[in-house]
Length: 344
Image (cartoon, rainbow, N blue to C red):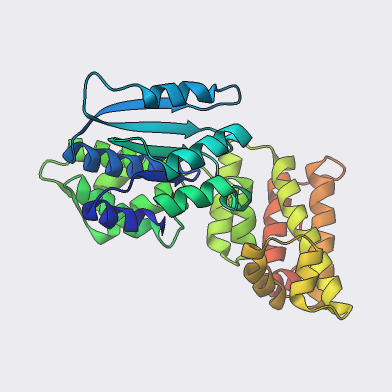
């Protein structure tokens, strides 16, 4: 079966399966899933835990020997196999599939894939594991989901936050679950009665948000102008090089221009995006962005990109971050930007 993290919380109460594959690239959520499995396993008498890290030169016979060895300390055990790249290789994949189909007695097998994508999901060993047990695919918490995640984590910490305190914390830790957990743990120590208000959060929290250029691209294309500007300022304050930000934004401009040209040439939107290399999960956002543009704004966008390129690279006098800001506006709010003039 395929489970989300939320579904796993319910499933473990119905009885453990012989094998789980916990996959994703959000370490904090992976650890939450593993904690759920370990707690449920201890209740069922799994008292011993063995961990194998299956890197590139891992000897898979070592895992086989370990499973064949009877535990001297406990009658039931958890065996965790960590795959740093998510790819066990041909030998490892075959062994994991075999172990899933023929589980070792009194053994709970937990496989942790610290990287996971569609190509890995389609492999035979993953399908075999999910058929024999469960694939728990961990997906990042979106901005819309973050308040719900925070409320659950706050409740688990025994705290009660005012609504505006949750809003303040959400703003400060956006995109960084580890920072959020750390701040909640810290507030649990300093809140005298478990009650946290907005002022307490402001006094306690250091800005844990860590913005990257890909988050900026998504915010700009998604017309979330306020968030895009906040991310841009965050990148600047963190010392991210302006040319790296320029690269990300110009890449979006070139993609939008390529899709626009294809559609103007008679291609359906889906085909134009496919030809321009737009990933399927970004096509809706790119489509909405293009619907905000017209011929005039697309010309202005290309001019803003060329201007930003010259300023950032020192070919024209001006503020590099000011030029990047104007480019952000030209992408996400074209009708507003085109009414103005390039000021750098």
